[in-house]
Image 1 (cartoon, rainbow, N blue to C red):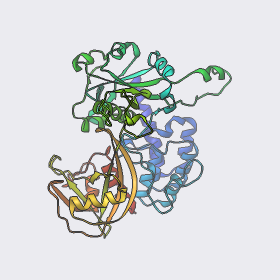
Image 2: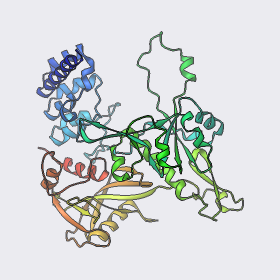
Image 3: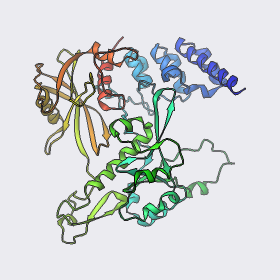
Image 4: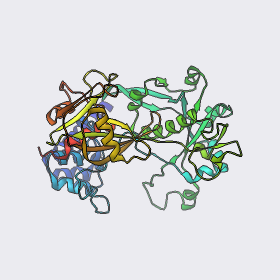
Amino acid sequence: MTSLQMSAKEEMVEKFLDAAARGDLTQVSSMLTHAPSLINQKGYSGWTALMLAARNGHYSVVERLLSLGCDKFSVNSSSQTAYDISKFWGHRNISNLLGRTDDGCQRVLPDSDLHQQENFFSREMLDRLSAKRTDRVWLEAKQSAADTVYLLFSDLSPMVSSSKNSDSEEGEARLCRFSYEAVKDLLLKPETVVIFLGVERRKRSPSSSSSSPSETDDAIWEPPAWFAINTREDAAELLKRCREGNCSFPKLLHRDLLKLREDEAGVVAQARSVLAWHNRYSFCPTCGSSTDMEEGGYKRRCLNIDCRSLKGVHNTCYPRVDPVVIMLVIHPDGNQCLLGRKKIFPAGLFSCLAGFVEPGESMEEAVRREVEEESGVKVGPVSYVSCQPWPMPSTLMIGCLAVAISTDVKVDESEIEDARWFTRQQVVESLLKGSRPALIIPPRQTIAHQLIRYWIGMNSNL
């Protein structure tokens, strides 16, 4: 009986998506009247009705779906929103409609067709509540609360559980969540590092009827707090604490952390970056004395009362973030881009050039310097696109587009192995599923992938 019901549901979803793809406004409206839950249902490759209507230029269907509150920020298996799809296929009226924010303003800048990109590791599912970090009484109460969530790290690797799914052979990884009772013995050990991550973002109640809990009850309710623990305990022993199957501490973080869900990846970016800072900076960088952790893990105070780090704000005892520019360099003809590869890359993989920003250097100058150092190509105009936290261990990747003013490539082999110009067609082929392109680009979770896809979509009118 259950299988028949699922089959009927799947048939209804397919019928609804087909109506949206054909632009049948009457059928779309009628089906949503009887089954409102259809509005954000996904079909093949994660496409929604909004995406299909945007792909085929059905403005009235897009407008109707938006008026009924569909999720316009939903992405398909290629990480495309309906906005991305409408831009790629040249439906400017629809992209303008989708590009508006809730207050009616355009999401895109007046001098750019590029909309704000949410990158992997960037999603914030927690309210960090930084003002509470100095409230020791509140923090101690939250640490022992029954609904508090703890994430367990061993050697800066989070404990995750893996499962197979229909979309990926490797499956999805999810963070293992622990209660206070499950980890309270670890909290008592002096070598354990505990940091406060924030509280779950409060969701608006689906019902506002008089039968719902009173406003007083709602006012005193507080969302669950999240903490992260890094411990030196034996990893095999720690895994015994998890009741879920297939638990592990990933070893290849650059690959394995990309399997996390988008919201949990953002939590890991925050947690691992701060824990890595504690792991590397247990002594005062000013005088070399021991330090003590404060403010929920976001400050270390020197225990030497004569240390000058205690006099004024010298930023010697706060978590560091290392800025890195990563740039897609565009050929002067606009139809080629410059990509490079390191020796450690898999065969055929090329990516954007990147490098650390030096002290006293602007973002634009860092782009120009790094590109010329690595490839010999000179760069003129530079524009910012978006950024991505990268917790390996605590980097902020600043994504840019840059226009070359010279084209001869001369690789600095101490930096990279190879750098080449690739045509737009070669890049498009690398993005198509089922093809066997000569060029392989980084996975969608990387900002390099998003910069490349961004450039492809900028001037497309296919």
